[in-house]
Amino acid sequence: MQVLKARNQIEIEKLRLFQLMGVPQPPSVKLVSEFAVTPTNLRLEELLEAAHRQNPVVLALRSRERAANLHVRRERGEYSPTLSLSTGIGGYTYGFTSSSFPVQQAMAQSEASRLGCIRTEEVRAALNLSNNLAQCGSMVLTDADAQAIREGNSRFPFDFTRQPRAFTAVLSLPLFDGFAREQRVQEAVANRSDARYSVRARELALTADVTAAYLTLVTAEKTVALQEQNAAKARQELKLMQDRYRIGATTFVDLAQSRATYERAESDRINAIYDYHKAFAILESAVGKPLR
Image 1 (cartoon, rainbow, N blue to C red):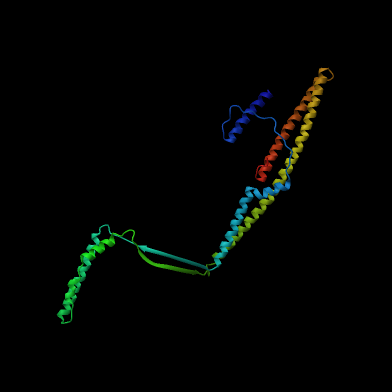
Image 2: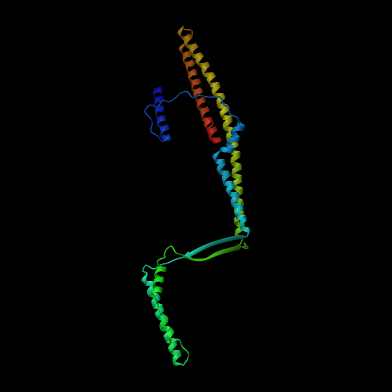
């Protein structure tokens, strides 16, 4: 009955494992009952150095600290005068969709100017003043002028009328802004201090976590070696008890007790191996990189 329950629990745990992995369970999956336990050749000093240099959380906090330092420098820079220089060139162009429209406008303006000239000179003639009434008749739009207007309109959009180049210099002197600048500086300094304390706190916690994980791994490795010795000894005692039971030198109760002792030792050995690999995974998580 216990064997059936154990096998059923194994199948359930395999389903949960692949559920956590987010992939369907392959049809032929076998659990490995033995995991290699290699001697720990890691040094605590090297692990601490690697953790402080490569741990993602510490790197992120240090980046925030650098950003806070730059923010403080930026806010303090608000006290300095600011000189802004700018220059630019420009031009404009335009054109009418119909080239006859600007010609008509020019003709209307020319006719208006001619009529205005005639009225002015007639008034001067009525007052016996000198006048140039004869010149008013020459104020007409000629065909050459109309052609020039049409040619000018056809240059759009590639012929620009350039504007003069402009140079601008603006000097800004920060005076009094209601202590808003001082408030921003103090807030930036406080944020920088918080970032520094966060980095320091995380480094101290990282040192403690890595050290504790390393010591746990060393203890787990020694526990595996001890449990393997206990399991080997229990296996030998069980074999000896089985041989004595065959020749009638012991009872079935003694044999059953020896088997139970062996099963407990084997279970403790397997649990010790599991604890070893779990301790290794915890150490890798604390350091922030794979160690195997």
